[in-house]
Image: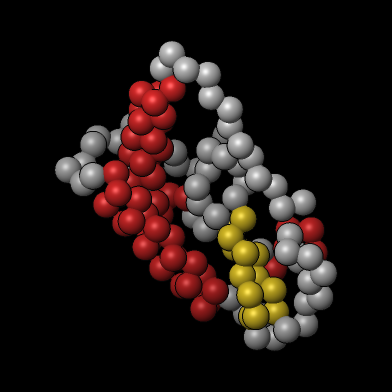
Length: 125
């Protein structure tokens, strides 16, 4: 481990899955805007990509492109210098994120019991 605190269990809240997802989305949006506001770029930010490291981590890496960047395709991870990337702190989204992941896993297990499923992965590059 890298020394980061990790929530391995979260008691279920009274919120439904939709409310939990909406709350996490709002929190991620808020932290993203806050991080972009605090970043010091030499040119105005024109567009932002939220990139995810894996299918099990829903906390995005923020990849901003400024007026000075040349983006030849829509996969910023290949064209924007990693020094410009912003990593959100996953701890800011706990224990809600762990509860969300547990509920999603439980819901998926309930839908796939006895059935073979095929996962789809979309890659930009």
